[in-house]
Length: 261
Image (cartoon, rainbow, N blue to C red; front, side, top):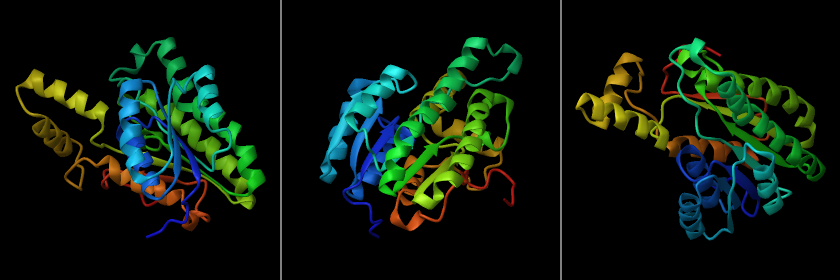
């Protein structure tokens, strides 16, 4: 299926691994030229080399996109993108909300809320002028379903969902869409590190720890998701066929949460 976006230009933040990497891959397969950003230069350059195999232009920008300097470097490489995809490494888990420090709150808000907002504000005028734009934030299921363990992740992203929903109404007449994808548990680098560490402590395997989590949290799909599944949805939301879907928060969690809407 041709998504109708060949030749478009995209910024994908957090694209060196995980769901951001998968989103970049699916866009590259559709012929989208990329500017990808992440903090770890070596892993980012490796990802860029693999993405170029799809015959598209890929510019790798090693930067911390939660900072003003980092955002400036990314936007200098692609000042007028047609597509913006934003994700980032998750903040630490918070089993005790009283132990969260003011610095942790500041960092979570800067990374999970202010960075994507500032990127959106920077690229939106050009999209409106050209009357075409797609913005997708890869956030977290915790934005919709609060959980103490994920307060630092869910709180800022819930605010981002509110912001994108409001802005989406403003720019809908200009053929610019803003949507959020809310993943549950996926096999990402962060999850693999966390569950591998648990396996080492418990004398088990990564697979066994995942199975224990699936059972404890009653994930009906019986598994964690694969990053490619998120990447495929992101690419479709960036397509010509998704112009009437905007201001939405789409949950991908293997039916873990119970909600009609």
